[in-house]
Length: 161
Image 1: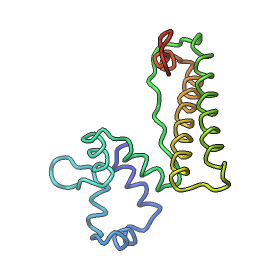
Image 2: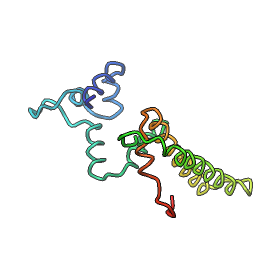
Image 3: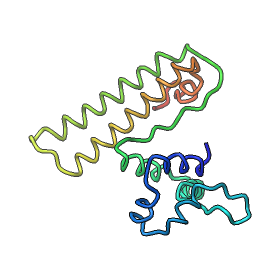
């Protein structure tokens, strides 16, 4: 779906006039965002396209994570899809267990004094985000029957994770 199509659908369920007022923009600008820009000047570069441009320019996924957090969620990158290799399942499950253990260790360390500081909360959040990401990658591979992304992440013998 193109950004202007999404905005057109959103505006069917939301007052364009209210959006314009909330954003301190003209009503015509809001409607232009929902038009395809064919290069004739009829549409306008909308905020969704700008975010995509910013992401491509910086290649920094924290931008997407920030938006997801503002919407009450989180961002999980989809794994690359190739050919199935189920023999890599066990190391992948071990990685999830290790990530969970790491999270529990951070929580236990932080809660040891019966208080959790903002810095400790930030560490817990970081470990939690990593666990969610690793687990989502594993689940997506299971759903697709494709474990090449898991194989590609495995360290060589004697390597580290």
